[in-house]
Structure formats: structure tokens, C-alpha cells
Amino acid sequence: MLEHLKEQPKDKILALMAAYRADARDTKIDLGVGVYKDASGNTPVMRAVKEAERRINAEQTTKAYTGLAGDPAFSDAMIDLVLDGAVARDRVAAVATPGGTGAIRQALELIKMAAPGATVWLSDPTWPNHPSIIKYLGMKSKSYRYFDSDTGQVDYVGMLTDLGQVLPGDVVLLHGCCHNPTGANLTMPQWKGVIDLLKDKAAMPFIDIAYQGFGDGLAQDGAATRLVASSFDNVLIAASCSKNFGIYRERTGILMAVAKDEAQRDLAQQNLAYLNRQNFSFPPDHGARIVSTILTDAELRADWEAELEEVRLGMLDLRKQLADELRRLSNSDRFDFLAEHRGMFSRLGTSPDKVEMLRADHGIYMVGDSRMNIAGLNADTVPVLARAIIDAGV
Ligand code: PMP
Image (cartoon, rainbow, N blue to C red; front, side, top):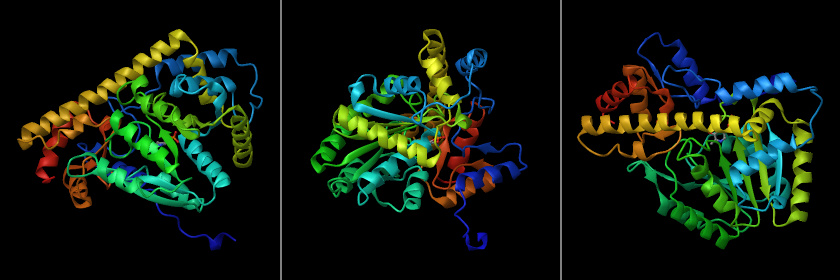
């Protein structure tokens, strides 16, 4: 039986992590994997998470199954965090999922059940797991232009031109904030333009929001998602708690389905619960309980928001330092986009050869498409990276 299996494509980021570990140079810099790191290179457990876990351990009296949709308190708290009243609560179906990835997978399966012929449109580039899961599920997909490597900005004209080809009933996947891998994001007027176009085309938006709080702040980072959610009868939203709560391995995420009315919400809810049942029955609970404990307790929530804000401002500061240093060394403003990007990533916009040169000659590890994890830097390594970028002739 097992001899019939074929080799699967290797995950490039995991391969990069292995190469980094094997590199003996003590000057090496890891800008690869998408995990937040502080100035010492650690991925800490947030204070509010520690305290929530302490309370859960002390107070939890059972580990019996939750419902198929997970704990309702988690759904309520997350719907509130992401949508903040933009859509009536009785129009939103929701299920807890294993991470944001689980939410994306369930969303795609729901689309497949409802509209098997729909094409899912993806930004070029996007997080590689999007096309990978779509391919695995045998669904149709197309890409729309998104990033202009010359300017480091969104290619808005290209994006609208390509989305002009969308057919009624197609699905358009959009990153709610902090686009991965580019770091380039739509302005609010541009979001409005995309919304108008998709309404015109009778397409359904599908928002992946994995970095709320990492860009311009918790509320601001949710603004586009809220505008989209309130502009259509139907929207799917996959949200991850991995980054903003720092609970990566707890596998905590949620899929929300905005429905036209309460009756449609009930139908969507029932189908989402069915999908959870087929794939894993009950979603993981520990991370979800940490999140709902924090979000529903004023003191814990304030502490979480304060720590998240420190993380966000730290990354913004690193962006600014890097852009300043590159302006000084290159005597030009061509790297200023790095300070304008938001979230954990920026795509430098250089060739795979230059990325390899940075690795071989300078021990700087970034993903082959020139995606850098800004959180992998600190005040000492920013000048080293800037100098290497100039030396490599980027
Ligand atoms: N969407 C995007 C764009 C991401 O970058 C990630 C994390 N790399 C996810 C979703 C899902 O993350 P997780 O499954 O770890 O919650």
C-alpha cells in the first residue's frame, strides 16, 4: 500500500530553518520562519496568556468534550474582536478550528460544498498554504496581481484589472491586514474600490486575518475586514490567534461565515459543525479558552493589549531603523517602502540569486522570494543586514 505514495513537495520555509540550524557561523541572522521573536531571539509566552492558563488550571473541573463548534464564549469573544458589531450577531455563524490554517481549510471545504465550480482568486504572491490546500482539495484557483517589486507597493491597477475577470459566484481571498509575504497593504480607499468591484461582479470575499494587532493596532487592523463584512450578504473570515496571542502550538483559530439573515446563518452554522465533525470532531479547546479568558476579563485584556502594542511598536521601530540605515547607505529613498510595510513581513523584491548571495556570503536567511521576518532583527543586526543588502547589490 504505502509504496504507492509519491514524494510531496518539501516546505521551503522548514528547509530554510534546517539550513539555518546547520550553519556554524555565529553571525548568522534568521529572517525566515514566520514566528514573532523579541530582541533576544525568543518567542515568549505573553503575560496574560500565562495568567489565563494559571486560572484555567486552577478552575477547570472537566476536560469533557465541548460542542462541535467549540466553546461559544470563544466564538462570541472573537467575533467581537474581529467584527466589533459591524454585522448583527445573528448573521454570523462560527466554529473554532485548529489554528488559522484549520479555518482556511474549513472555509475552502464549505465553498466546495456550496459552489463546487467556483474559482478562488489568490493574490500573487500569497501565503503558500493557500494554493497548496486549494490544489489538495481539487478546487479551481486563479491569481490576481498584487505586488510591484520595483516600488515595494501594492500594484493596485494590476489588482483591479485582474479582478475585473472574476465571475459571479467566484471567491476572492484577501489578507485582512499585514499581507504575507509582502507586507504591502491596501489603503482604506483602495479597499473601498475592491469592495465596489467585487459587489459589481457578484463575487464573495474570503478574508484571512492572521496578524490583527501587528500592523496599525488592534482596531485599525480589523477595519478593512469590518468594512468588507458589512458590505456583502456573504463573507467568510478565517482568523488566527497564533500570532497576536503568541499561542502558535495551541492551534487556535476561528472560521466565521457572515450570512444574509438568521435562517441562512443557522444553515451555515449547521454545515460548519458538520465539517468539523468530518475532519476532527471537536476543535482544540485549550488555546480557545486562553483567548476567551483574556478577552472577557478587563484586567487581562488590558495587559494583553499593552504587550501586543509593545510587540507592534518594536517591529515598527525596526522597520524605521532598517529604512533609515538603507537610506544612508544607498543615498536614496528606494528602500523607504520597508518603513511603510506593516506586519511581520516585508518582501525586499530582489531575485533568488541575491537572496542566495545574502545567505552564502553573509549568513542572512530569508525566504527565496525575498520575504524577511522583520521580528528576526534587533538593533545590532539591522546595520549588518543593511550593509549586506547594499553589498549584494540589491
Ligand atoms: N494565514 C496567513 C496569511 C498566515 O501567515 C498564517 C500563519 N503563517 C496563517 C494564516 C495560519 O496560521 P496558524 O494556522 O498557525 O494559526
